[in-house]
Image (cartoon, rainbow, N blue to C red; front, side, top):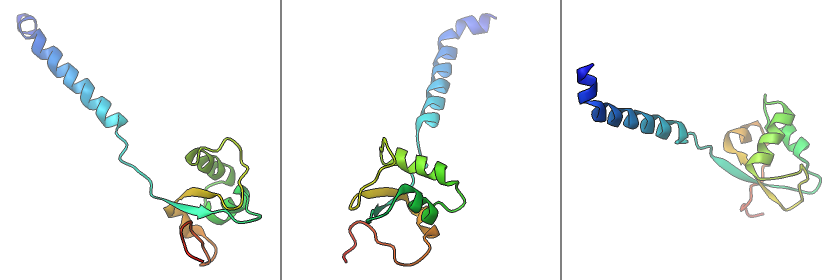
Length: 105
């Protein structure tokens, strides 16, 4: 008990270091997702995009994720608008006629 009293500042210092370390580990986001811009064409809806790109993810979950990623408050999208879609999901595209924002026509 005497050792703890004599070294109370040292114990407190190490406890603070441990708390700070856990805080940094938990708040540091190392899983950054690569995204690509997909240009919305006339007649596209989030549901039709989900049919093309969601893969095994249920459509409603994919739509919620895309809305959150693009800061959309409603599911309404407009032709000419660009949406960020995780690049890994572009592999689910049904054909090779993908058009990305910035691609020349």
